Length: 272
Image (cartoon, rainbow, N blue to C red; front, side, top):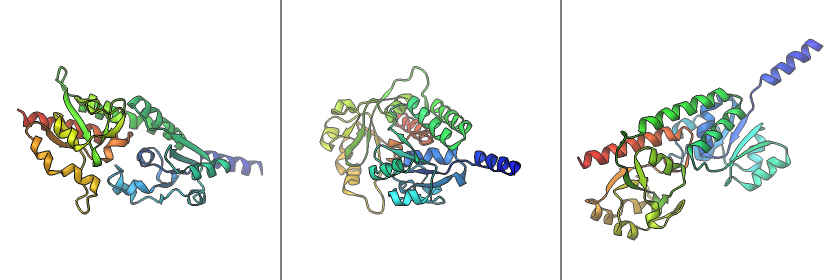
């Protein structure tokens, strides 16, 4: 009997926690650091190519629309959530004693590293978190311009003129890749919108622009392809910066770094 209890206890200790993620940015980290059978569900945003960097990969995982009933039925050991995740679901999990890890939006690579470590620790694979951080560090180093290069003035410009200002994670990525974020020139602090009129009146050197959906662009997305933008094309170089790169850290930063480095090369080639 004692031997049976010991074996059962060992199996319980060895079992890795089942995890549900309610946020696309957390989804991307989770699939890198957890075993597949640990992932009870990803957020439904994970399959949206406009918001997720793992949209294709996410099609092979279960998803949740984050209602309390749905999440609880998955019987998770740990739930990863963000500040804008459903308050009702978070409250229900708290009442039931389910471990819920709440994450804020990281404003720097240092903060994002801490998030990666938390998720990897929650999954029981801290070494995978360190490996992911090392991969991202290599990508950031590869995106850096040659020493002494002059920074290029740039503005991130997404649907409805949404832009990222100073003190954000994407702002840090821009600096690392050889850009200076000029969002403050348009009155922005951390996040906000830049009107088309303001942009045309004072265009930046580089517009890091999102892409409208080719099948059915929204009114907000149509602003990205407004004909008036061609009137300043001689003063401003446009480079692609997909919206899905704007909000997330984790493995998304590998794509972010490569995209920014490619944008810089494009601009320099255009002005060679």
